Length: 542
Image (cartoon, rainbow, N blue to C red; front, side, top):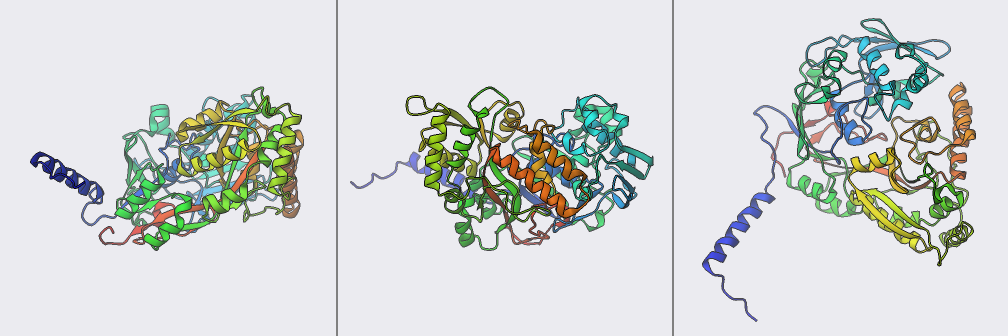
């Protein structure tokens, strides 16, 4: 049947719709002042905080690391270099470190002093702060006791010898300390501002920074804007004058925004679209080996089926990691049967689940047998809820896991939520099984294995506890010989895997879209790209 001609009013509606569509397809970029360099940055999920003592998300670290700087920092290639500290010395026993600060100012003109670091470390170790990263700072002498409330804050191993000299005393030798200090949990905070405004110090108009940028505005759900900090000690070498960070949890939508020129950079793209992106946007896709492990955590805190190791092993065995990594994700991810990613410094290759060498069919059969031994079967199926974030790759992965578990008789219901809600549920143990990932805070196995120490707290989501595991990590902390330390860490990983404390799924790769006009981006294993090293070449958006 031939279409009927449009009536005049219908024609007007069509013209208006086409005009609106054209406007939506045109690049939407905030105006950049003449002579200035502006960067539009897609930043995955909305940050929950800009407080370095509270933050725990990668999207938070990305912004905080542009606003703030610790004693050490990252070069463009991710390597550790001096930051607020010009230089440092270490005692012969490796327990006392003395840092000499360079002359630096907070963005309000107040000098950055050693007292700001002492204040920050006492604050993060204070149990009232509730920091998820307090366990990391417990490397300071009496740090764990301070968090437990059995030692006063002044007892921790951090003191200002003078305004520009900071002494740190450690619980055990840590040759990796300079790299550890790049993490946001070791950043200073402006004591004079926090004392005045309390937790509200991170709000625009109150926030004070010591890094390359200062906070200008934060519109939830829209964008966060920072501008070059003229008081930053290296401001003369910072190219980008303004950055707008946008939450971009929809990876395909973010990809389209990059293609239209609305965004210059995104920190993620949908994994299985890599080949397509390379075809239609040559030169944009950046992938690199990464300190990242995706895994499933089981809630052993609450009474339930996951306290039974047979159930945990059955669920872990029956996941088809080869399919997930090589056919579903397809961007270079590797099937994971251990937890510490390949390429991690000081790591011993080899730790893996004891069933890792079996065929997938054999693992499925064993999973059914283990579930039967635990009392589950066709007449009494195991019913569980799998929680995951509302990110495209996470949803694809959850569907694959759901299908694998149903194949061995497990009834699975998936529950998706925004990242902030998911992590709140994990910290409060409001889950049964959750699909999460861990990105190393520094390049050493301890940043992965430390998650499962019984003293870790909130980020040990499944509440795994094994005294033998704790003892191996404690022995590694005290071991001065690098090879013996590596061996102890390998034994600890194998112990945790033998307990099926978690279900490793895959080792990740960093995946970014970077407009070729952006210079200074250097791929690195830590996927750290501080904006002070970036620049944007003149030219119209594509």
